[in-house]
Image 1 (cartoon, helix red, strand yellow):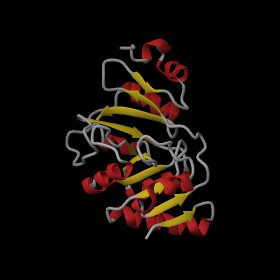
Image 2 (cartoon, one colour):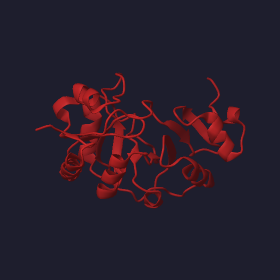
Image 3 (cartoon, helix red, strand yellow):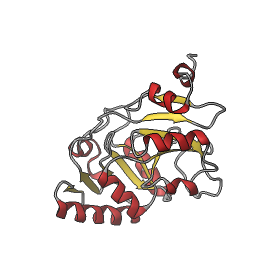
Image 4 (tube, one colour):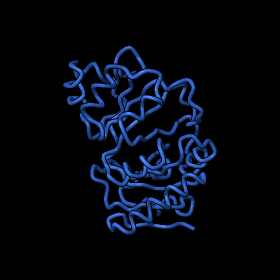
Length: 220
């Protein structure tokens, strides 16, 4: 049975996070608040749960699921190496609305979709999300919406779209940014901004000491 918890109430927040942890460990799906938009999440290391997440969104394996982490140190075991550019961007913008695409550690036993050896990582700036992530570890999290429909910026919007496909909804109030994160690809010879969101291209260029124009893929 689907449950909704008001995480602005301390008692409901505690119960809700415990329920979400139980659901995730049981291979089921949850919806959580983040600083950007609401996310639908699963245990990143449970392939069946990740497949259920993709199915709930109506999304194919060609769009692999990003991973959220609860601390900077968590990524050490998830990536092949942490490039200097990643270290600089993490120091500047994490926790926050910046997602980084990096090469994953070859030893990882997970299946996030057809990611071709890469993983997109982010540490969200939201206390409920951080608390949950520190309880359960890395989570596969995508925007809480049906593919092609607007991303949910409230728990109610997420439930309207996903309904009983999700076991636990954690309501943390309206998402602060109400926009998907900026994505930077660090797997090539030079950083590339794949999507501009709350963290601007100019801000990224300033941290990396490069020209903003050089961060955007050339038009085909």
